[in-house]
Amino acid sequence: MASAAALGGFARFYCRAGVAAEIPKRASMAKPSNLLKVAVGQMTASADIQSNFQTCAGLVQEAVAAGAKLLSLPECFSFIGSKEGESLSIAEPLDGPIMKSYQNLAREAGLWLSLGGFQEKGPDAGHLYNTHVVLDDAGGVRGVYRKIHLFDVDVPGGPVLKESRSTAPGSDIIAVDSPIGKLGLTVCYDLRFPELYQQLRFQENAQILLVPSAFTKKTGEAHWEILLRARAVETQCYVIAAAQAGKHNEKRESYGDALIIDPWGTVIARCADKEATGIAVAELDHQFLESVRQRMPIGQHRRYDIYGHSSGGAIGTTPHEVTSSL
Ligand SMILES: O=C(O)CNC(=O)[C@H](CS)NC(=O)CCC(=O)C(=O)O
Image 1 (cartoon, helix red, strand yellow):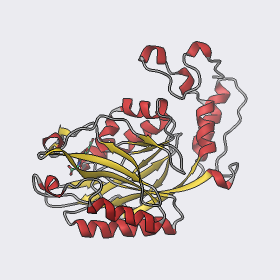
Image 2: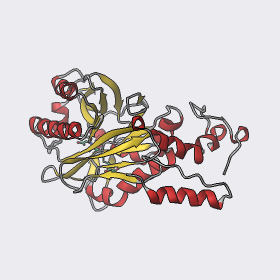
Image 3: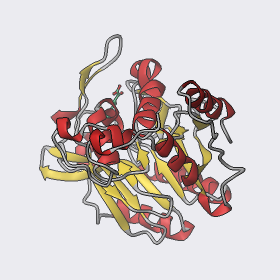
Image 4: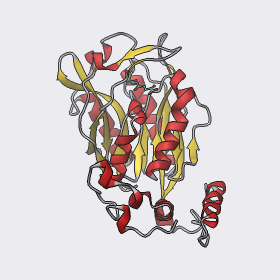
């Protein structure tokens, strides 16, 4: 769905700057090959691994029926426990039976899967990794990202969560190639750390940022959409944010509202009901992404010289080398 308001905004911006307005068009201008359908999932996981799998399999079927090439599932897609230490007891290595069942699912459906927040067996008996795994359409593991920011927070008016009690942080930034573009892998609370997303865009050349989450109801109401849209705008990437939704058990409730956002910051897909299980589908348009990046060349204006790391794949290294049209 083309966001006329966003494009109109772009045109006005250029007119004010005294540059001839040439409005980037999306679907109408792009060749069909530029349009790639993706799906984002929303669900209410429980402590029943089998029933969570059935739910995910249903979402996979819906995504295939909609013609999507990739489906992103939320953090804790395979399990959300209600008791302390329960996650540790079900944690498995990536070559264990749980991940194997999702690999079979991806292969049988011929669908890429982004599986946010898998309870991966960790470095010691007391800690797991909160791992985002990307599977290709043959079920092969293409990307493994271990959440680097752990949610140790006393949510004002909400729960106290201390993720580091049973989770070890990862330390690597991960981006992987896919048929829909370069994917930047993150998980949930990472969303609050923009530097990670800057690195994914400007060092790793990500085009699509994945943020599978289980946001709390309280923080979701206040911050979910605004943070996601900010990450999309400041990185000029598509953002796909799968979400846990609703009540998992007596103690735990998630905000929901799975979203897909375009590089101009427009929400282009959202599940109809914030709290229900389902998917939302959108078309990614790389021509549109490129036009946003060309017309607002923050990749060239970024002060790599001051920030202290290399330019990665961006064009131009310092503003002095760049002639801006703005
Ligand atoms: O514990 C598990 O079962 C899996 N992990 C999670 O659900 C994590 C850690 S508790 N949740 C978040 O990061 C929420 C972040 C959030 O809500 C915010 O940033 O506002």
